[in-house]
Length: 603
Ligand code: GLU
Image (tube, rainbow, N blue to C red; front, side, top):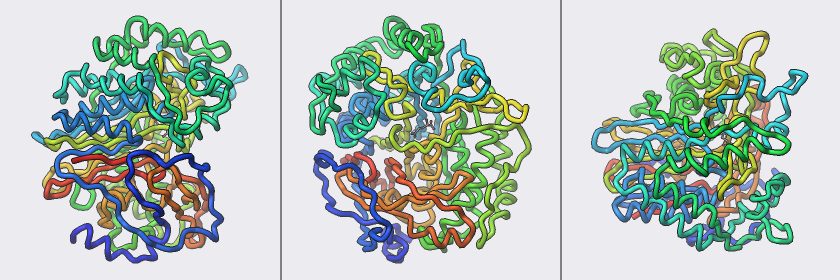
């Protein structure tokens, strides 16, 4: 059945949770937002005036978290650039306009689909721990783990950035436009300035620690120390210079020489919380190409990023477990469907938390975790009426402790399809909003090392995701490319959101493949996740920052889930899914998450 026809059949009740107001498609985000007010539950939006807002195009498309970045990517594609060319330009632009989320001082994962061969490749630009760290990096002198806040600010948690080496590697393989030309639009923007958006303003305002770093203070605050107001034209000449150097001399100019020297110095000389990074750590950094994790789901294949992110494998486990159920027969977001998704997710997270880590350091039993027979056995544990409560990992093996970051302020995902049908799904991050809160030469340094387990041993056993020199911290980022029955790319998507990324992404795949939603409808689904604890439902709130103001909630499901034994919590769940569908006729339909400021552009 055609997606549009299916969507029309979706019962209104099932989509009770989401309402659009004031849909428009002006090129700039809404003016000053009054914050993001929570709604009383009684005011949870009832009228299901659900409609699709998918942007469509014939030849190329980009969906990204900021209009300036989307426009820059579109320009590269219009000039005949490849999807990877556009990704380089979009990332350069996001470093400028979305510094809270990602940048050249952070790490990323990219999935690439090549239209001519049908091959999916996975590029790993995850940060690494400096050579001089020990597994006790985040322990206090008395041996107890540091508090998160203690660990995060300063140089201690900064990992060796991976974005530029990864982009260069992908560009060597799939680039069409010369590397140096790809930075031009972001350089020009950095010199001319861009308008501070409501989201950026709110994040600066709410961040007490940002002004402690002299460079960040100068960049993000007025002379009198106020957070830059919405609409302020913000320039970044230091970043323009950095990008210019990288454009001319390649990623090596970042990893060797004065830029690397400044990064290492800033990390090591932090007055209160220094790290151990050296120039050698930077020059030694290597991006990796890995084997993507591709699993069958319905008549499709869902391809994701392998470890060191837990994203692809955990999404694959959730879908593998759900393969046992006829999800098409359930109403979208009905209590029955959400119960099954939550339970599948709970089981998958039990394994994730124990087994997944950097495969160059830990033995990750990936094949066992994705074995269909094993997943069938896991699926049998799901009772239609009663929650499992806390699930235990299913394979035996080493213990892995974990911090369940809920994310929501940082990280970014963009999806790109070029004129030839090549596809990029890339998720990029500085970890927390503004990363380590250290600004060097116009960009923010990440705090990605806090994605390691702070405790190296639990119950006397070493933890798979413990800190080790040169190791990549486990991530949850889950860039995803879905292949259709004939093997061609059909969907590209992904999201920010800490370890909730996994649930946000899996839900959209279910929306697309089981419920026949189009990309924008799937993105609009109210959020729910389970990370082997409480089931979290999106609480009623206005997500005011997009061109569309959206009221969304899944809170109405609480009663039905509690009856099945779930502990339910409500949270503002700021996903940021940016996706593109390539329809069987080759036309494109994109979606941008109304919970952020992003936009779909194409032609
Ligand atoms: N650092 C997280 C990860 O790599 C992402 C953080 C977020 O999405 O806010 O999984």
